[in-house]
Image 1 (tube, helix red, strand yellow):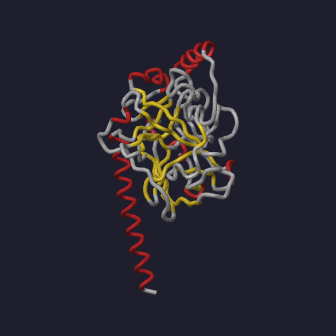
Image 2: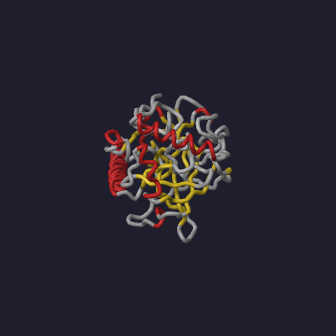
Amino acid sequence: MTSESWQRTRSTSGARSTRGPRRMRVAALLTAALATVATILATTPLAAQAIVGGSAAAPGEFGFMVSVQAADRTGSDAHFCGGSVLRKRLVLTAAHCVTGNEPRDLRLVVGAHHLDSRRGTAYAVDKIVIHPRYAETGTHDVALLRTTRPITGARIPVVAAGNDAFERNGARLTVTGWGTTFFLLGPPSTVLRKVDVQAVSDSGCLLNGLMGFRPRTEMCAQTLLGDSCQGDSGGPLFGRRANGRPVQVGVVSYGLGCATPLFPGVYAELNSPAIRSFLVDTVKSEAAAIRKAQRRSSAARRNR
């Protein structure tokens, strides 16, 4: 299975999936970023815990979470990205997770907590829809995966158009995933983990401009010594409505290392007009295609 991508990098492996080569940005900019980080690390004690600074989620706490896996592997070894259930047959993930793959390469596991257990339901994929501007820009880092049958269980809604409350500096958010607990070290976590972070204003994310941060389609979030990491790519960044229900505002994309001071994690911004229109249009077109296929199937059964 291949996962070639134009994804931007965090040092030598900036994307937060656990597979595939990543395109290097301009070497001079990256060198400058790493020099800055080296200075910071020399004077800042860093501790890394799971999902980097997080804790284990309770079984069933986030029923909308999806483990995107290699179809030819099993257990935690198969996991390489996260995702979220958007509709009955649509899963939202990062474009860089699935670029270069065919639907048959993928398996989606919904309702899992421990990746090496047999709990959770596996779904095959019959279509991959990547944002049309991702290949040329390296941003707009979202994709939708269509399953061969309806997904049972929880779904997570996308933030309403024009609602910027979750993007304001300091807004409380959560990110979940099975990613590594320390940048470039060790396998992904076998247990689903979570970490609370805060949204960072675009002006507060300026140093990520060294890696090509795009405020029109991306947003930043961070907490002290806490972050998403490799294997968390594609997973949801979400806030809570007044009634406590989750609403997704971003998709894990990239960063410089994990939990690196002054370099917040970067997420595809779902309230970006360019990303929102892609999601709305794709959901509508896929719903129409599914209904059409169902009508054909019903007609074929009647004519037997």
